Image (cartoon, rainbow, N blue to C red; front, top):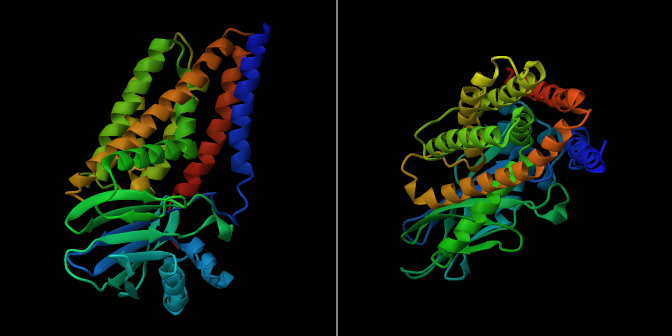
Length: 377
Protein backbone atom coordinates (compact mmCIF):
# COMPACT_ATOMS: atom_id res chain seq x y z
CA UNK A 1 0.00 0.00 0.00
CA UNK A 2 1.42 3.45 -0.87
CA UNK A 3 2.76 5.40 2.06
CA UNK A 4 0.26 8.26 1.76
CA UNK A 5 -2.67 5.84 1.96
CA UNK A 6 -1.31 4.24 5.09
CA UNK A 7 -0.82 7.74 6.49
CA UNK A 8 -4.48 8.56 5.80
CA UNK A 9 -5.62 5.47 7.65
CA UNK A 10 -3.38 6.29 10.60
CA UNK A 11 -4.58 9.91 10.81
CA UNK A 12 -8.23 8.84 10.73
CA UNK A 13 -7.61 6.26 13.43
CA UNK A 14 -5.90 8.85 15.62
CA UNK A 15 -8.76 11.32 15.18
CA UNK A 16 -11.41 8.73 16.05
CA UNK A 17 -9.32 7.32 18.86
CA UNK A 18 -8.86 10.75 20.38
CA UNK A 19 -12.56 11.45 20.32
CA UNK A 20 -13.42 8.12 21.92
CA UNK A 21 -10.67 8.54 24.52
CA UNK A 22 -12.20 11.86 25.49
CA UNK A 23 -15.50 10.10 26.04
CA UNK A 24 -14.05 7.24 28.05
CA UNK A 25 -11.74 9.45 30.12
CA UNK A 26 -13.55 12.72 30.84
CA UNK A 27 -11.73 15.78 32.10
CA UNK A 28 -10.91 15.72 35.82
CA UNK A 29 -13.73 18.01 36.87
CA UNK A 30 -15.62 15.60 39.11
CA UNK A 31 -18.05 14.29 36.48
CA UNK A 32 -18.06 17.74 34.86
CA UNK A 33 -17.39 18.75 31.30
CA UNK A 34 -14.28 20.84 30.93
CA UNK A 35 -16.21 24.05 30.32
CA UNK A 36 -19.51 25.67 31.19
CA UNK A 37 -21.49 28.71 30.14
CA UNK A 38 -23.31 31.09 32.46
CA UNK A 39 -26.32 32.96 31.15
CA UNK A 40 -27.46 36.40 32.29
CA UNK A 41 -30.48 38.45 31.31
CA UNK A 42 -30.01 42.06 32.43
CA UNK A 43 -32.81 44.63 32.21
CA UNK A 44 -33.57 48.08 33.63
CA UNK A 45 -35.50 51.23 32.79
CA UNK A 46 -33.55 53.58 35.06
CA UNK A 47 -30.56 53.31 37.34
CA UNK A 48 -31.74 50.10 39.05
CA UNK A 49 -31.17 46.77 37.34
CA UNK A 50 -32.76 43.31 37.39
CA UNK A 51 -30.52 40.30 36.64
CA UNK A 52 -31.69 36.73 35.98
CA UNK A 53 -28.79 34.27 36.10
CA UNK A 54 -28.83 30.72 34.76
CA UNK A 55 -25.98 28.70 36.30
CA UNK A 56 -25.10 25.00 36.25
CA UNK A 57 -26.48 23.65 39.51
CA UNK A 58 -23.84 21.22 40.76
CA UNK A 59 -20.98 23.49 39.67
CA UNK A 60 -22.59 26.40 41.53
CA UNK A 61 -22.94 24.37 44.72
CA UNK A 62 -19.34 23.13 44.51
CA UNK A 63 -18.02 26.61 43.84
CA UNK A 64 -19.91 27.92 46.87
CA UNK A 65 -18.02 25.26 48.89
CA UNK A 66 -21.13 23.42 50.01
CA UNK A 67 -21.26 19.79 51.09
CA UNK A 68 -21.75 16.82 48.76
CA UNK A 69 -25.35 16.57 49.93
CA UNK A 70 -25.97 19.85 48.09
CA UNK A 71 -24.04 19.42 44.84
CA UNK A 72 -24.88 15.73 44.39
CA UNK A 73 -28.65 16.29 44.62
CA UNK A 74 -30.33 14.94 41.48
CA UNK A 75 -34.06 15.29 42.09
CA UNK A 76 -35.43 18.73 41.29
CA UNK A 77 -37.31 18.94 44.60
CA UNK A 78 -34.10 18.28 46.53
CA UNK A 79 -32.14 20.75 44.42
CA UNK A 80 -34.73 23.43 45.17
CA UNK A 81 -34.53 22.58 48.88
CA UNK A 82 -30.75 22.85 48.86
CA UNK A 83 -30.90 26.21 47.08
CA UNK A 84 -33.31 27.44 49.75
CA UNK A 85 -31.33 26.33 52.79
CA UNK A 86 -28.04 27.49 51.24
CA UNK A 87 -29.46 30.76 49.92
CA UNK A 88 -26.91 32.98 51.72
CA UNK A 89 -23.86 30.96 50.63
CA UNK A 90 -25.04 30.87 47.03
CA UNK A 91 -25.77 34.61 47.04
CA UNK A 92 -22.36 35.41 48.53
CA UNK A 93 -20.65 33.42 45.80
CA UNK A 94 -22.69 34.81 42.90
CA UNK A 95 -22.72 38.46 43.91
CA UNK A 96 -19.00 38.32 44.65
CA UNK A 97 -18.34 37.37 41.01
CA UNK A 98 -21.16 38.99 39.03
CA UNK A 99 -21.32 42.76 39.40
CA UNK A 100 -23.27 45.70 38.03
CA UNK A 101 -21.98 49.28 38.20
CA UNK A 102 -23.57 52.63 37.36
CA UNK A 103 -21.24 55.43 36.36
CA UNK A 104 -18.40 53.31 37.81
CA UNK A 105 -20.11 53.03 41.21
CA UNK A 106 -21.00 49.47 42.37
CA UNK A 107 -24.69 48.62 42.61
CA UNK A 108 -25.97 46.75 45.68
CA UNK A 109 -27.45 43.29 44.91
CA UNK A 110 -30.37 41.63 46.68
CA UNK A 111 -31.80 38.23 45.82
CA UNK A 112 -35.44 38.41 44.73
CA UNK A 113 -37.89 35.55 45.21
CA UNK A 114 -37.00 31.87 45.28
CA UNK A 115 -34.51 30.07 43.09
CA UNK A 116 -35.73 27.75 40.36
CA UNK A 117 -34.17 24.77 38.54
CA UNK A 118 -34.54 23.66 34.92
CA UNK A 119 -32.70 21.40 32.47
CA UNK A 120 -30.35 22.79 29.83
CA UNK A 121 -28.03 20.64 27.69
CA UNK A 122 -28.83 17.57 29.80
CA UNK A 123 -27.72 19.32 33.01
CA UNK A 124 -29.64 20.99 35.82
CA UNK A 125 -29.30 24.78 35.93
CA UNK A 126 -30.26 27.04 38.81
CA UNK A 127 -32.21 30.19 37.97
CA UNK A 128 -31.43 33.05 40.34
CA UNK A 129 -32.90 36.57 40.25
CA UNK A 130 -31.19 39.63 41.75
CA UNK A 131 -32.16 43.27 42.04
CA UNK A 132 -29.22 45.69 41.84
CA UNK A 133 -29.86 49.08 43.49
CA UNK A 134 -27.75 51.73 41.77
CA UNK A 135 -27.07 55.30 42.84
CA UNK A 136 -26.45 58.16 40.46
CA UNK A 137 -27.97 60.82 38.29
CA UNK A 138 -30.29 59.97 35.43
CA UNK A 139 -28.62 59.48 32.08
CA UNK A 140 -25.66 57.53 33.41
CA UNK A 141 -24.21 54.33 31.94
CA UNK A 142 -24.12 50.79 33.32
CA UNK A 143 -21.31 48.24 33.25
CA UNK A 144 -21.71 44.48 33.71
CA UNK A 145 -18.86 42.27 34.88
CA UNK A 146 -18.62 38.50 35.31
CA UNK A 147 -15.94 36.37 36.93
CA UNK A 148 -18.18 33.35 37.53
CA UNK A 149 -16.49 29.93 37.73
CA UNK A 150 -12.90 31.08 37.08
CA UNK A 151 -10.05 28.75 36.17
CA UNK A 152 -8.53 29.28 39.62
CA UNK A 153 -11.37 27.30 41.22
CA UNK A 154 -10.17 24.29 39.17
CA UNK A 155 -13.64 22.83 38.55
CA UNK A 156 -13.92 24.05 34.95
CA UNK A 157 -11.98 26.31 32.62
CA UNK A 158 -12.64 28.97 30.01
CA UNK A 159 -16.06 29.89 31.40
CA UNK A 160 -18.13 32.16 29.18
CA UNK A 161 -20.98 34.34 30.40
CA UNK A 162 -23.58 35.00 27.71
CA UNK A 163 -25.27 38.31 28.48
CA UNK A 164 -28.51 39.61 26.99
CA UNK A 165 -29.27 43.15 28.02
CA UNK A 166 -31.81 45.93 27.68
CA UNK A 167 -30.30 48.88 29.50
CA UNK A 168 -29.82 52.61 28.98
CA UNK A 169 -32.04 52.51 25.91
CA UNK A 170 -29.88 49.82 24.28
CA UNK A 171 -30.60 46.17 23.49
CA UNK A 172 -27.97 43.62 22.62
CA UNK A 173 -25.89 40.64 23.62
CA UNK A 174 -22.28 39.93 24.53
CA UNK A 175 -19.96 37.14 25.65
CA UNK A 176 -17.86 37.87 28.73
CA UNK A 177 -14.64 35.86 29.29
CA UNK A 178 -11.73 36.05 31.72
CA UNK A 179 -9.60 38.25 29.45
CA UNK A 180 -12.51 40.60 28.72
CA UNK A 181 -14.87 40.32 31.71
CA UNK A 182 -16.68 43.68 31.54
CA UNK A 183 -19.35 45.02 29.23
CA UNK A 184 -19.84 48.79 29.23
CA UNK A 185 -23.25 49.49 27.77
CA UNK A 186 -22.99 51.60 24.65
CA UNK A 187 -19.25 51.10 24.16
CA UNK A 188 -19.10 47.66 22.56
CA UNK A 189 -19.00 47.78 18.78
CA UNK A 190 -21.02 45.57 16.44
CA UNK A 191 -17.77 44.03 15.17
CA UNK A 192 -16.96 42.84 18.70
CA UNK A 193 -20.37 41.19 18.94
CA UNK A 194 -19.90 39.47 15.58
CA UNK A 195 -16.50 38.09 16.57
CA UNK A 196 -17.67 36.87 19.97
CA UNK A 197 -20.62 34.88 18.65
CA UNK A 198 -18.68 33.60 15.64
CA UNK A 199 -16.12 32.03 17.98
CA UNK A 200 -18.91 30.75 20.23
CA UNK A 201 -20.53 28.97 17.27
CA UNK A 202 -17.23 27.44 16.18
CA UNK A 203 -16.52 26.30 19.72
CA UNK A 204 -19.97 24.77 20.11
CA UNK A 205 -19.54 22.61 17.02
CA UNK A 206 -16.02 21.48 17.97
CA UNK A 207 -17.02 20.64 21.55
CA UNK A 208 -20.36 19.11 20.53
CA UNK A 209 -19.25 15.53 19.94
CA UNK A 210 -22.72 14.45 18.84
CA UNK A 211 -22.69 16.97 15.97
CA UNK A 212 -19.13 15.93 15.06
CA UNK A 213 -20.15 12.26 15.01
CA UNK A 214 -23.12 13.03 12.76
CA UNK A 215 -20.84 14.90 10.37
CA UNK A 216 -18.30 12.07 10.32
CA UNK A 217 -21.09 9.55 9.63
CA UNK A 218 -22.26 11.68 6.70
CA UNK A 219 -18.74 11.85 5.29
CA UNK A 220 -18.26 8.09 5.57
CA UNK A 221 -21.36 7.58 3.42
CA UNK A 222 -20.39 10.16 0.80
CA UNK A 223 -18.41 8.68 -2.08
CA UNK A 224 -17.99 11.67 -4.38
CA UNK A 225 -17.30 15.36 -3.90
CA UNK A 226 -20.76 16.07 -5.31
CA UNK A 227 -22.29 13.89 -2.57
CA UNK A 228 -20.44 15.89 0.06
CA UNK A 229 -21.54 19.24 -1.36
CA UNK A 230 -25.19 18.23 -1.69
CA UNK A 231 -25.34 16.51 1.70
CA UNK A 232 -23.55 19.29 3.57
CA UNK A 233 -25.75 21.89 1.87
CA UNK A 234 -28.93 20.05 2.89
CA UNK A 235 -27.71 19.73 6.47
CA UNK A 236 -26.69 23.41 6.57
CA UNK A 237 -29.99 24.70 5.19
CA UNK A 238 -32.02 22.49 7.50
CA UNK A 239 -30.25 23.30 10.75
CA UNK A 240 -30.05 27.00 9.85
CA UNK A 241 -33.84 27.12 9.47
CA UNK A 242 -34.65 25.57 12.83
CA UNK A 243 -31.76 27.30 14.60
CA UNK A 244 -33.08 30.73 13.70
CA UNK A 245 -36.74 29.81 14.28
CA UNK A 246 -35.99 28.30 17.70
CA UNK A 247 -33.62 31.07 18.75
CA UNK A 248 -36.22 33.68 17.81
CA UNK A 249 -38.93 31.90 19.80
CA UNK A 250 -41.03 30.89 16.78
CA UNK A 251 -40.46 27.17 17.47
CA UNK A 252 -40.11 25.74 20.95
CA UNK A 253 -39.21 22.05 21.35
CA UNK A 254 -37.99 20.82 24.77
CA UNK A 255 -34.41 19.61 24.98
CA UNK A 256 -35.69 16.34 26.47
CA UNK A 257 -37.12 15.57 23.01
CA UNK A 258 -34.41 17.10 20.86
CA UNK A 259 -31.35 15.49 22.49
CA UNK A 260 -32.42 11.80 22.13
CA UNK A 261 -33.45 12.42 18.52
CA UNK A 262 -30.02 13.89 17.76
CA UNK A 263 -28.43 10.71 19.11
CA UNK A 264 -30.88 8.61 17.07
CA UNK A 265 -29.97 10.55 13.92
CA UNK A 266 -26.33 9.55 14.31
CA UNK A 267 -27.31 5.91 14.76
CA UNK A 268 -29.50 5.93 11.63
CA UNK A 269 -26.85 7.47 9.37
CA UNK A 270 -24.04 5.27 10.74
CA UNK A 271 -26.18 2.11 10.35
CA UNK A 272 -26.99 3.14 6.78
CA UNK A 273 -23.24 3.21 6.12
CA UNK A 274 -22.89 -0.31 7.57
CA UNK A 275 -25.89 -1.84 5.78
CA UNK A 276 -25.83 0.05 2.51
CA UNK A 277 -24.13 -0.85 -0.75
CA UNK A 278 -23.36 1.18 -3.80
CA UNK A 279 -26.01 -0.63 -5.85
CA UNK A 280 -28.91 -0.55 -3.39
CA UNK A 281 -31.67 2.00 -2.92
CA UNK A 282 -30.49 3.56 0.33
CA UNK A 283 -28.85 6.39 -1.56
CA UNK A 284 -32.12 8.03 -2.61
CA UNK A 285 -33.18 8.33 1.03
CA UNK A 286 -29.94 9.88 2.23
CA UNK A 287 -30.79 13.46 1.31
CA UNK A 288 -34.28 13.61 2.91
CA UNK A 289 -32.94 11.82 5.99
CA UNK A 290 -30.09 14.30 6.32
CA UNK A 291 -32.46 17.25 5.85
CA UNK A 292 -34.93 15.93 8.43
CA UNK A 293 -32.24 15.30 11.02
CA UNK A 294 -30.61 18.62 10.18
CA UNK A 295 -33.81 20.29 11.34
CA UNK A 296 -33.40 18.56 14.70
CA UNK A 297 -29.71 19.47 15.01
CA UNK A 298 -30.66 23.11 14.48
CA UNK A 299 -32.82 22.94 17.59
CA UNK A 300 -29.81 21.59 19.45
CA UNK A 301 -27.63 24.49 18.26
CA UNK A 302 -30.28 26.97 19.42
CA UNK A 303 -30.32 25.35 22.84
CA UNK A 304 -26.69 26.36 23.30
CA UNK A 305 -27.67 30.03 23.30
CA UNK A 306 -31.03 29.70 25.06
CA UNK A 307 -32.29 32.73 23.16
CA UNK A 308 -35.87 31.60 22.82
CA UNK A 309 -37.97 34.71 23.23
CA UNK A 310 -40.34 35.86 20.53
CA UNK A 311 -39.48 39.38 19.48
CA UNK A 312 -35.73 39.00 20.04
CA UNK A 313 -34.92 40.43 16.61
CA UNK A 314 -32.33 42.77 18.10
CA UNK A 315 -30.24 39.63 18.63
CA UNK A 316 -30.32 38.67 14.95
CA UNK A 317 -26.70 39.77 14.41
CA UNK A 318 -25.55 37.51 17.25
CA UNK A 319 -27.57 34.58 15.91
CA UNK A 320 -26.23 34.95 12.38
CA UNK A 321 -22.65 35.25 13.66
CA UNK A 322 -23.09 32.10 15.78
CA UNK A 323 -24.46 30.21 12.78
CA UNK A 324 -21.65 31.35 10.48
CA UNK A 325 -19.15 30.12 13.08
CA UNK A 326 -20.83 26.70 12.97
CA UNK A 327 -20.85 26.61 9.16
CA UNK A 328 -17.23 27.58 8.60
CA UNK A 329 -16.03 25.13 11.26
CA UNK A 330 -18.11 22.42 9.62
CA UNK A 331 -16.51 23.21 6.24
CA UNK A 332 -13.05 23.07 7.81
CA UNK A 333 -13.76 19.60 9.24
CA UNK A 334 -15.03 18.41 5.86
CA UNK A 335 -11.97 19.82 4.08
CA UNK A 336 -9.68 17.85 6.40
CA UNK A 337 -11.52 14.54 6.72
CA UNK A 338 -13.08 13.91 3.29
CA UNK A 339 -9.79 13.76 1.33
CA UNK A 340 -8.46 11.29 3.90
CA UNK A 341 -11.56 9.13 3.47
CA UNK A 342 -11.20 9.24 -0.32
CA UNK A 343 -7.61 8.00 -0.08
CA UNK A 344 -8.63 5.31 2.39
CA UNK A 345 -11.32 3.97 0.01
CA UNK A 346 -8.62 3.38 -2.59
CA UNK A 347 -6.78 0.94 -0.36
CA UNK A 348 -7.36 -2.69 0.49
CA UNK A 349 -8.45 -1.49 3.92
CA UNK A 350 -11.61 0.08 2.48
CA UNK A 351 -13.69 -3.09 3.04
CA UNK A 352 -13.32 -2.99 6.79
CA UNK A 353 -12.73 0.73 7.23
CA UNK A 354 -16.42 1.62 7.04
CA UNK A 355 -17.22 -0.86 9.81
CA UNK A 356 -14.19 0.17 11.86
CA UNK A 357 -15.31 3.80 11.76
CA UNK A 358 -19.08 3.29 11.97
CA UNK A 359 -19.39 0.67 14.72
CA UNK A 360 -17.85 2.87 17.46
CA UNK A 361 -20.08 5.75 16.36
CA UNK A 362 -23.17 3.54 16.64
CA UNK A 363 -22.08 2.22 20.03
CA UNK A 364 -21.45 5.65 21.55
CA UNK A 365 -24.63 7.08 20.03
CA UNK A 366 -26.71 4.24 21.47
CA UNK A 367 -25.31 5.10 24.88
CA UNK A 368 -26.16 8.77 24.33
CA UNK A 369 -29.68 7.87 23.17
CA UNK A 370 -30.59 5.90 26.30
CA UNK A 371 -28.72 8.30 28.58
CA UNK A 372 -30.71 11.26 27.20
CA UNK A 373 -34.15 9.72 27.62
CA UNK A 374 -35.63 11.51 30.65
CA UNK A 375 -36.57 9.13 33.43
CA UNK A 376 -39.05 9.97 36.20
CA UNK A 377 -37.36 10.86 39.48
